[in-house]
Length: 500
Image (cartoon, rainbow, N blue to C red):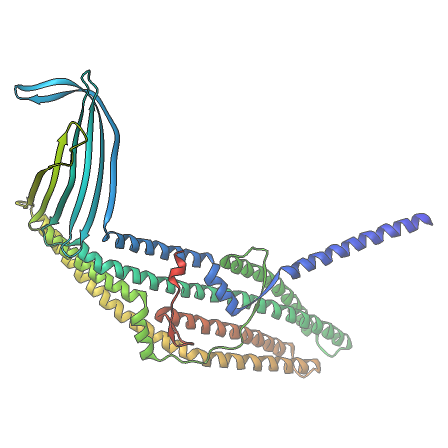
């Protein structure tokens, strides 16, 4: 008797532990469950998704590229030094009597300070420098020699009609503005991607809900049909049809569970969440009540869309290529002029007293005498490329306006489409309930019941798809125009915060 009690106690312990583990597992699932609304998914995607992080780093790269361009037009101060330069070798030395080979033993040191400034108006460069050199001889007699240039001012100027800096001043600011628009547009593309991942999961949730309900209904109806069959009120084929419907509902339920797990994984990955995060979505029931005017949409798209700036930049770059090839096929000349002071001596004292003047002017000229039409060919190629760019830009502008027109038309239809889908969903649900009740009292066949069930499920899924379409077109319009149609203002970002 005692042994039986002992075994009973052990069994109760095992049962208790099993129930505790199940409770802990359910509790962990509940604690890890996270409900997210449509707005929260969009905001999370724009702030922390890998796609948004990549867009931020791309903008930062463009910002520092622009900063580098701006820095090129500011004074540039640099220092160079050689500490030391040991030379022990046999070299050829020129004397009045002729050249001889002699042993050289010396240590040289040198320091230089130079200030450079580019001149955008002319494309030239002006500089000012100061340097000091010292040589220590490693011979028996020893000795030291100094050479100093207290100040040296020079000017370099290309004379070929092509000014690189003039074109940079046209192109680089435009590229930076384009990168700003690209970043805002990238966030709208993130929102678009988030919309699709959201409704993929929302549809999977709804499919699981439908499958659970259908399986429960099919099981109940099959049990009722079996009882009616035993009473002889329905035929065997109807009973078999109900059993097949129940089996199909079970298969659909299993498929819906797998699909839900896949869609959760995809959304977690996109948002940068841990894959164990159990997301439950709250499907939006309301949409903004606004209509987009075509003229306003075209105006905002021409003003804000980054592709418009890109086409402007392409035209300028094509003109730049023509200007460069034209300059290369003609006279190439560079003017260099400098003025400075210098002094030498055996001692440091006195190096900066009564320095001697030194001037230098050099004009280098390069004239192509026979290149077999190479330079002319490059010039003609650049002109042809420019015409191609003009044609492509004109075509792209027409296609762009056409796209805006189509997007406006389709977006303005989506609210009506959503109302129709919602009404169809409501009617299909009511029809199914009525059909089910009529089937229970034997007024209609199994076939009619299955048709009503299928129409109900199709209408429910169609409503989710109508919601997806509305928000897809909504963010497509934002992406095309970079305009907030709800608050009636141009989209913008705090760019200063992005580069910190």
